[in-house]
Structure formats: C-alpha cells, structure tokens
Image 1 (tube, rainbow over the protein chains, first blue to last red):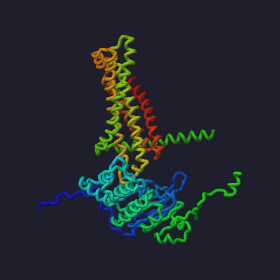
Image 2: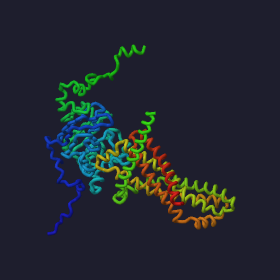
Image 3: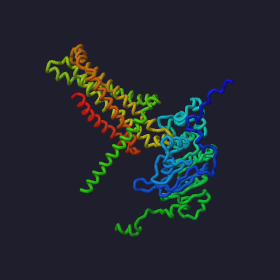
Image 4: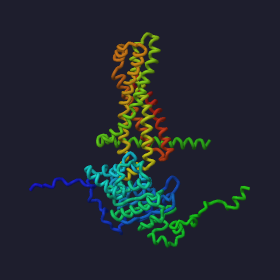
Length: 295
Length: 258
C-alpha cells in the first residue's frame, strides 16, 4: 500500500532537540520544583550580592521575588538564565545544573525559557512583527505563512496586532514591553521571567501588563517568575513571594501570609512604610551636634 | 612613589586584561565565521551598510587625493623634465600606499565608528542579552556577519579609491597641466607591476580590513553599557584603528619592499 501521508509537516518543535528528553513541558505539576537555588553565593568585585541564597520555585503559578533596590533581583534572573555564573552553589532548572551545561545545552534550555527585560530589549532595526518572528525564524523552519499566523496570534494576545508594522522607536514604554512579552512567548516557553515589568508605567499600562502576566500564566500553563518592587500590584497576582535582602531570603510565603507577618522588616516592605528596620535617615552624626558643629 | 608604582601596575594589568579579552573575542568570532556559508544574506545586508554606504566618501576622497598627487608630482617631475612619468607616480603612490592606508583611515572614521556605536548601543539596550536569552548566539548573528562585511569591503574600497585617484590625477595632469594623455597611461602601464605593486596593495588592504573590523567590533562588544561608555568606545575605535593601520603599514611595507 502506498503511503499517501507524505512527510510529517515541520512543526514548532521540528528543530528543537530530542523531544523525548523534555519532560517538563505542558503537564503542570504544582508540587514539582522547576527552579531550585541552593546555597547561592555571588559577588561583584568586593560586594557580596548573594550569601547562601536558597529558593525553590514550583512549577506553574506566579512566583514573585521582591526586595529593595540593589539586592540583586535582576542578577538572580541572570543566574537562573545562565548569563552569570555563581561563585558557589547551584541553580537547577528542571533538574539541570545551569552552570554545568555546555553552550549548546544551555541554549536548548533557554529555548524553553522566555525573558521579559525591563527595557524590552527589542531589536531596534526590526519592526514589531519581525521582532516577534525573530525567535521563530531563528529556531524553526516553519513556512512563512505559518510564521505570520503565529506572530499575529501572539500580537493579538497582547493587544498589539494593529501595531505590527511599527518600529520599536515608535512604541511607548508599555507597548514595547507588550511586544517583548509577545516575543517571549513566541516559542511557547514553559517558564517566563519578568525583570521589573511594571517600572515606569502609567496606571493604565501597568494594569494592562499585570492582567497580561496573569492571563498568560493561566492560559499557557507556564511558570512565571517576576522580579519587582511594585508590591501591591504583584502581590495581587502572585502565588508565592520571596523577599530578599542582604543576600538571603528573609521571608517567603503567600501574599496573605506576608501581609500578616511578624517580621517588622517584611511588614515595612510590604506596606511601604517610610521608616522602620530600614531607617528613613542615612546613618549620620546626631542632628543637633551636626548643626552646632558648623557654627 | 609607591602610589605611582601601584597605578602603573594597575594600568599594565588593565592593558593586558583588555588584550586578552580582545584575543578571546577574535577567537570566538573566527569560530563563527561559517555564517557566510550558512546565512549569506546576513553578510550581504551588512556589506551594504558597511561597504556600499562608505562608497561616497571613498570616491570623493580618492578623487581629491589623486588630484593633489598629480599637482605635487608634476611640480617635482617637471624640474627633471620627467612630467610624462606623472601617471606612474600617481598610480604607484595610490596602489602601493595611499589607497590601502587612506581607505583604512576613512573606513575607521565612517564604518568602524558606526559598527562600534551600533554594537555598543545593542549592548546598552540589552539587545545582545535578549538574543542570548532567546538562545541566539550574538557572536554568530551580530558580530560574525559584520566582521565578514568589514573584512571583504576594505580591499574593494581600497581598489575603488586607487582607481578614482588615478582618474583624478588624469583630470589634473592631462586636463589642467597639459601632460600628454598617451604618456600618462602608457608610462603607468609599463611601470606598475601587478604582483609587486597591485598585489602588495591588496594584501595590505586585506590586513587593514581584518584589523579595522576586529577593533571596531571588539570595542563595541566590550563597551561600558552607558552613553558615555559607548562614546568612549567609538573614539577608541578611530584612534586605535588609525594607529594600528599606520604601524602595520610600516611593518608590511618593510617586508614587501625590502
């Protein structure tokens, strides 16, 4: 009998590595850790950023990593994505030690990660459409018609199908981040990392991005890791929050648990109080002494 | 005294560290040069922005340099009654020396600085990090095509520079100063040797293209990702390329014409 089926059509995964070795994809097991950070130490020059950090991020759901500016939240995302190497400790993504992977293995892992940079990181010489099509063109051999359909679907999901022909320079900050989000989900990742997704946005755009993050997470069944210090907005959509300070996790829990925490530092951070364990005043000599000293 | 020694030591370490990074960068780039076979379109697009868009400045400069050479050469040659050798003087000066060197200097100012600024800004705006996170190797996607484009453009631009320079020399020598047109071309044809002169000029421009591309791309890739960092990197590209080209020209000339 003649086989009339012909060759199987190339799919999105056609150039992905060995599908049999990809256990984690869309069957979400909320008890299974997707990212494990064990005893992480990392320094920049003489400045210690992480000093024995331990975090477990379960599969599915939205995990927020919060903390004051300069605590290394963005650095943590770069360590998870393998862009930086820790001084000590392990970063495991889906059981794979990111630092021990070869470049090819790391790239295979990254094809299953999406990342939304604070600036959007759109390629400025490509249009919105081409930016979203970029990972598809680089990693698949899909026919042009299918790429067009996929790109329009991704842009529709973020509400910017009508902006497909615009250049990145013509976009507002919020639009650029939405395009970057469409690009981040182009390869249907299992995990999306958001680096300060709400910084510098007006209230309407902020609401749009928060809604999109939640909607993407629920619709695609991905694991979302958000680094932010926009407490109220992120707490509203997060399943878990880790508060980091001084290179360690100081408190973890659900948003409700952290609202009623006994820790003064956590309460100050979550409620945005101007004074507390983190003092309003930078350490200085006594005020009176300082004033009289100048006389 | 001790402080001066410390500063000197720190400066020396910094220089060697940068040299090391530069050579590692070059090795990584060479490892990705297969891009010209795998994705020739990327190289062709960069050839347009690096090579074709540099044509105007090369043609205009080449014409003027040729015209000035003809004036200067005529003043000297006519004293010895050898004005007919003007074509030879202009052609040899251009093909052996001025074509490759001036093209490389102009290339550093026009295309090299643009490459550094482009790569530096891509780094500052996290576009390179974004590519890395999309599992796209920026060395292969961004650096290698530009390296090829700069490397291939330089000998072609140098050849065009020399050709229009010869034409500029003809315009001034024959058109304005009254040198015999037949002598201009025949003397040139008789005295300019393809292997000794033209090939050596091509070898020089290939070497300059390699160095100019390396410096421009490395400076951009290694730039501090701020506006000031990119600005400094762009300046360094022009200065370092100019110095490297002139030093390399001295060495190559010594080897070729000893």
